[in-house]
Length: 166
Image (tube, rainbow, N blue to C red; front, side, top):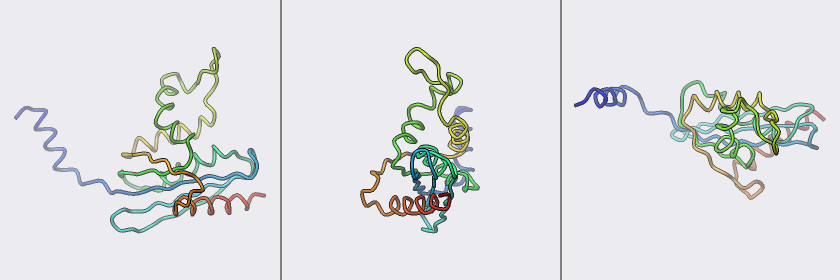
């Protein structure tokens, strides 16, 4: 057996299986910008136990609240997990899967025509980048307002949270 194979074998034997969780998120805004809310439902796949959270800001945007929901959900995990992230936000999912690697390479700037512009919501993207690195994440798009139970639940909680800031 080669040294590399021995090392791989040792590490796979000694590491426990990652806990599997589902993270459902949504953000809402009354006006854009305006009072915003975020919410998440985090469910352990094996035990079916759930943790929910919600909150908001007086003056925000829908995109910021969508990001905050994912940040809060991932931030509630105490250990590395295998996370299935469900979101109705193309902005969040495309940012995580397509745009963020390029933004990081370019120093968190994006090109708008021939001009460099700072990435919008950069502090939230950077926080999310750190949280994503701690976990094994797969991404799933859920159509908003299509009757998906957890997405509808998150939407309701996010809207209610935004009402606290009107």
